[in-house]
Image (tube, rainbow, N blue to C red; front, top):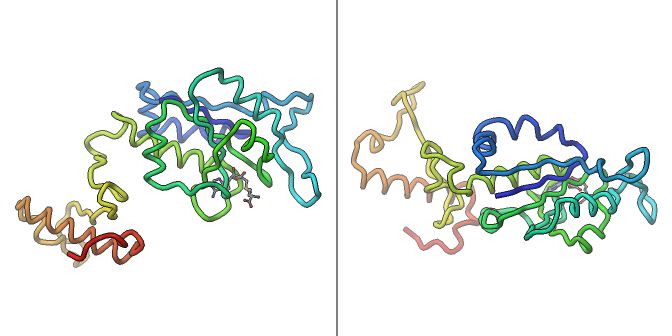
Amino acid sequence: MRIDILTIFPGIFESPLRESLLGKAIASGLLDVRVHDIRDHATDKHRRVDDEAYGGGPGMVMKPEPIFAAVEALGPGPKRVILLSPAGRRLDQALVRELAAEPWLVLICGRYEGVDERVVEGLPAEEISIGDYVLSGGEIPALVVLEAVSRLVPGVVGREESLERESFGPEGLLDHPHYTRPAEFRGMRVPEVLLSGHHAEIERWRRQAALEKTRRNRPDLLRDEPEP
Ligand SMILES: C[S@@+](CC[C@H](N)C(=O)[O-])C[C@H]1O[C@@H](n2cnc3c(N)ncnc32)[C@H](O)[C@@H]1O
């Protein structure tokens, strides 16, 4: 899968793209991630990518020309172009699954007051938000999209980080609690059933614990869940 990231702060991506699962997936060629500096497509000698807002008000707006030029420089092909924006469709695991099925994503990172609306209208770009809060730029949101999507690219997540039974999976539940050694820590014991080796009972316990956790932390996910 190919992912192009357009930003005015390419340095933000250096370490996240080098480390851990993302780093390995890129090194092994499972993911082809390319970071582009939007400033390289500015046309004036000061490499300006922002300007004052029409209609007035504080804060600058990212100009459309360098962003259009940066996307057009990627060449032809079936890209899904995304503008990270708090005013976009909110990211969830269903949208992550949809994005992971695409061959090529383009992630545009905004800054300042945001991006000239003609980027949305004219490229066109679809707006995606990572949640109902405002960050200073689209770089962290782009990394959130990239990491969530990359986990679903076959081969990226190994056995030790299995995707089975993760939160927001097909059952719509949160993950069950996890424990590791020691069996007792500061007076807190691991539930006995997990030490029993009895697979059917462990399975039953996990399902029940996942339901309880979902009911406690995210009752909104249980709207369609039948009573146990
Ligand atoms: C300071 S924000 C602009 C906020 C905008 N004026 C508003 O009120 O909706 C600058 C950039 O950060 C990014 N950003 C901030 N919060 C975000 C979020 N929750 N999801 C996705 N991108 C976000 C976007 O790329 C945005 O253009």
